[in-house]
Image (cartoon, rainbow, N blue to C red; front, side, top):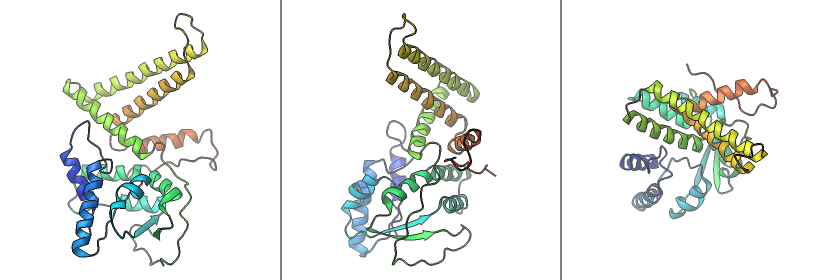
Length: 280
């Protein structure tokens, strides 16, 4: 059994700090090349290696990493969103450090939408064998035949913002926290300044709209593309603010808020983003 996560842990500990720090090991080019070399060496020595790995980027799974490994047999263990949530929530390894464990579970939960998009579009290819895992976390899964290929579950649930976007937002939040802490700013002071930054970006978006409408001759003309970019700045700044104020559950909190507020305008059958359960 060779877990590439161990190689990723070594990479993360070696490449700490900006600009090369990532929460996930897979963006590191050294992780891909080292994983292939390591698995091939083990295979040559043992004549068989099991590699538990979740790769949700199609180009990485099909052309970059596994292309270098001979005689690869893919086995996909597929589960519904609820089963994955149950298993993530019940995953408390012996000796776990509470804060780190909570962060890991939050990170995995953020990627549930990524997994089901991959399952719906490419992960269940003809070269893979599948097992459907739909039993609760506290009961063993019943055996399933691998002679047939079940259809993947339709994509019914996504987070308000996908996991890769949240990874980037988290990195920005940590970077700004480090910067403000070095200036001697307290936590609430940092939060206050970040919220004021949202107001600043909103003002710039308003100016771009005025320019696109041509209603202020002194400001000159602007395009709607410029307004779109400024609105994106508002969204990014707001997400960073939420991640700084709620580092442990920003993604889940946003999903709950979006579900609650959209329910006022969308019928239950049309609501695409369910609210995650409140933490215990």
